[in-house]
Image (tube, rainbow, N blue to C red; front, side, top):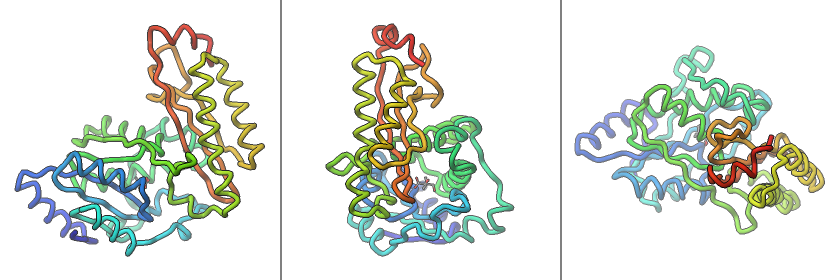
Length: 295
Ligand code: PAF
């Protein structure tokens, strides 16, 4: 595995890869790699000849009161995991390499609307930081395929929209959320949880699943489902930021054109903010009648 921190050196190495006719799959990460990331790497390896992983804790996507300084940085352990997976190229740029004139003067890439709802409402500017860095990383790596986790479902939707709107020649692939045995979605932020909080955290997935089952059984009062779910999270000791039943494609309210529903939740446990989602496909002919009164 070759590691590069310098853009020009990475680009020249990847130019050689392309010259040989090999395809490139890219997995952008912020490090502190767990099984969820490794599943993205495995998917990437199944799709292309060469896998490039980036590790960059992007300051532009952290708000002023968020966990940028505390965000776990575990480069040595991450390198070992990537090496064991057979990753060929690791890219570990510095903040100066990505934002040479500082973040304030750097060009921004923003996906309006989709970036402002759900996590975007409580983390203003977060997704602009994500799209700015992902667009830049795409331009540096020039991958054929880029792989993202479905746990960050809103992020995946926003990246897909950016790629479509800006005609970026990248195939974006989503990978199902990797979960611990009790259903908790794997996340670097799980490491912040105390033993007691870790015991409570799976309630998020349980509540999402219960909501999905209710919808599958024909329960169509979505406002009531959302409010019950928020109550259940509160009772378990979580502080819900949102619990929302949305069209999986637009992340807006469900309509008669909705083909798939996404149920998304964000909640705090102490100071740790956790997110998760589940989805349910609707059969357009038979299911809509059942959900026509839904709101
Ligand atoms: O999902 C993440 O880890 C980050 O948001 C990403 C996509 C690497 C951009 O910094």
